[in-house]
Image (cartoon, rainbow over the protein chains, first blue to last red):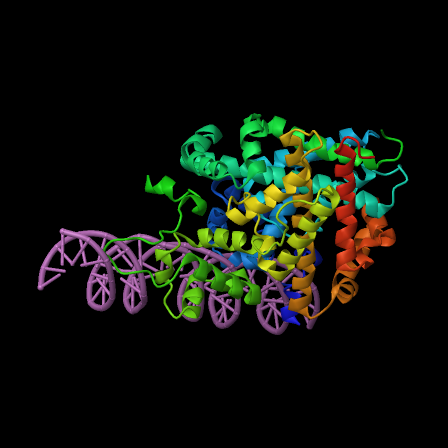
Length: 245
Length: 245
DNA sequence: TCCAATCGCGTACGTCGTACTCGAAATGCA
DNA sequence: TGCATTTCGAGTACGACGTACGCGATTGGA
């Protein structure tokens, strides 16, 4: 029982609130712990957000946190949904699906860049309230075209997958830049360059070589590159919507 | 210097082979270590593939491995490219792009299910030889339609992102089933059910509720579900190819 | 034969998540 | 008001982990 219980996601084990009865009152809260953990992770990376460190930042010890969160992994789930909460969306979609999905995509990217640690976490979709809100907004944007709910899910999935992957890639470059002090161009020239040149000259990978020689994507600004890929995805969605050329 | 050196990916630090000169000859190899690590990870998860455990399986200690691999993270890169090597592809694409990309997608899914640990690793695209081979095959399939190389890259990215995300999702359910002894249906009914019902009944997430009530995706077989999403992506690509209705 | 390079690997350090435990604090009820 | 009951805060401790360091064993060339 307690073995299976631990597998249950944090969303099904709500925080006890406003208990009435005897016993000391809690001095902290999930939200507070989560906030501190996010701050540490933002500044020093997810690995720095250890239980000990979070406790220290709160003026307490590591073990106190376990009154509020069953395991560190669950805390990370809380952190993920917390940052999704920063995605700013209107009450409901505008009616222009392309504009709405673009908004979600750009907002999600912004959050990702603000909290780089979340990009490296590939996990099952969280069912937290903020994630559900974004999901619902996005699917609403695709409603009204006569599509089956499963089609909408798949189409929105394309956007979500693209954004996650693009942000992951972008953050990879930022990390590289921060840890080596070189920007993308320098890095390419001084480190990857020789290796890539070797690969290209081997002649074994003609398309990769073309991408290196003719590709413009890697010379574009991060924002422009993101937009380029997003347009590709949105064009794919447009083709699936009846009545949209 | 050595700080930056450590950031360089494993692909730029090739294994010393066939050294001539004094010194003892190596008793192991990167390939051998990688193979053992993959076997352990397949059977017991990536966390079980510790340096100590890999050494033990080879009849040696943990520190011996560091003669071959700079860091455990680099070993994981090697493992990733090694399993991509299991993707079976013909010498060159057939000319039917949809068939070719489907093949890559299904092969990649098969590899992912065979090595579940790889799904949880979200990292920058590896530049290993096997990964390059799959990349080149896929982009070749999209060649000849007059598209710019960047367009091909973006279109193939949609497939890659979808497959990665779908496999991750599928493996999430398999893990859940293995660790709790329940299949997806049981799990839904006994654990997630009450929570989902609560979410649905809150009325705050109408599209999520519709997905729960009307959605057929979660009732389909994993293979069929994968194919459904893949078709959505491939349809999106078809729309981008000139001359393909 | 001897030197210098390389390998195998034992030891040890710092760090992590977290199980266990118990005194302190806060309440409801007598 | 005093006490029984319940919950919280947090110190201590354990068993992992990755890996820095250093040394003896092995090897080929001079």
